[in-house]
Length: 124
Image (cartoon, rainbow, N blue to C red):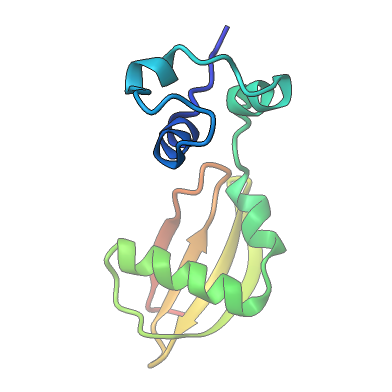
């Protein structure tokens, strides 16, 4: 059974002196009971995020910011995304043609795991 440690709450109560012992230590907080069953279930919830679906749900401005971040992480030059157009999926991955300020083009695919696949496109 997983025990949630309310460390910050225990330390906060120790400082206010209202009803709680003032000599509460970190070890006391470690031995605390779970807050409640709902918190325990939430802590055990390890559902994966589907980044493809998240990007598909974004509006154009949000998607542009996502593409800028992916390009900066690459690191590839792009100061501003002028446009992005959804194209046919590549190997089942949602893909966009992204045009940066100055005309540089990229193909960016965002798979479920969120690791962008970027291809420079100088021919289109």
